[in-house]
Length: 340
Image 1 (spheres, rainbow, N blue to C red):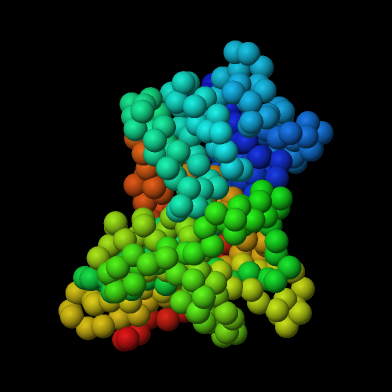
Image 2: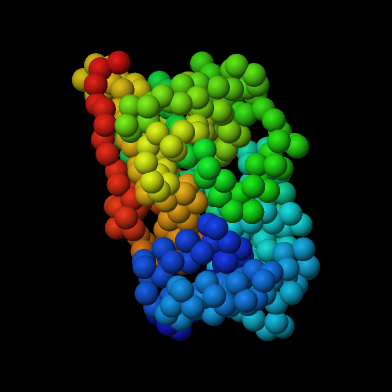
């Protein structure tokens, strides 16, 4: 099946801050792929569809309705949900149709419903949990660095954004929801799982320009992904805010990935990537969603992904993912490779 004969990929929240960027990234990666921009506001969805171009349509969606408010008989090749699927209606639709589903807005404390629906219907559809920092970018970059080491001791991920980079309404809703339900962040410290609060939930992050900011730990899925994929005993993810007035015009996102451990010759090493994008943090997240979607559909990197419950590292090759990021315009800098 070619992309032109596929049913559209339904981007729920596709007219939002991340969604519009994801649609544009997916269009760059797959020029012929049909895409449906879905949101509550028909005019906004139509405007984004026009910007994306190619075989792109717009539709209204109500994620709180069992039928999502979609036309009867509408079919889609995948459902990419860039807002919180609070009632799991979009997931149920994907399982009923047997098409890939991407869960983008679940914190580590919220994955119960996704896991339960998968367990109830494990052979129906591929379910990708993508509630990772910046659409899985951080986890895949960390694993790419970890491949250079015989053993990994610690992984520290820091996302440095401008203080005025608030994302869109969906991102704001995510952070407000987290404050209400789970103010602690899940960390792995010396081999033990810890819900960190207070001083334990902060650390200093040095960005690509050498500026130090205070980071706040987040309860994201990177920690459990990386713990399962490596032998690291300490893992954390933090977000830090820089003073944009000291840097100049325009927003910049700097994703800092630091991996420490032992090289194959037994020497100690501390490796670092900076992944930099000249936009709000939403665009790197959008890139991750777009790259994951084309992979699930079998349009790049291998055949279509079969039914199962996945994290990004289960279906995406780290080296290929980073190459795709650079194609989309992100800059990847190896800023340090030294003994610890």
